[in-house]
Length: 106
Image 1 (cartoon, rainbow, N blue to C red):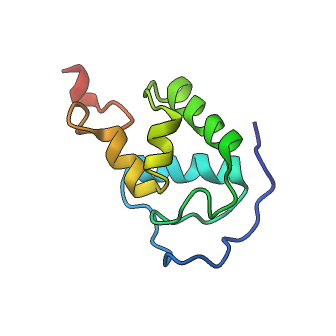
Image 2: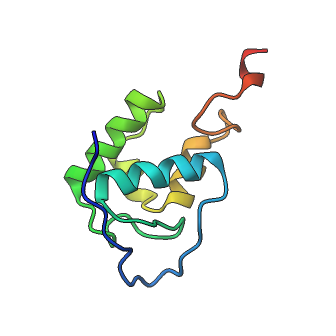
């Protein structure tokens, strides 16, 4: 799915900081597709970017189907930035984050 047409990042309280890790880049890309905002920084709040409960559900579903990562809507609301969500998804059981690394199969 192509997602929403792209529009510039709105003026937010958080200063723009680009994604640094693969997980953060993948999440930012997913949010850009769902919200139609480009670029999205790691401290930008999903809901301040125009997200709502429906678009949050779309992202949660994408985490489960595309990345095989379980995330509840409540967890998403508790971690509404790329940095917080990436950290929560990595968790203690997945130090490599969302995507399996080659070492996971060793």
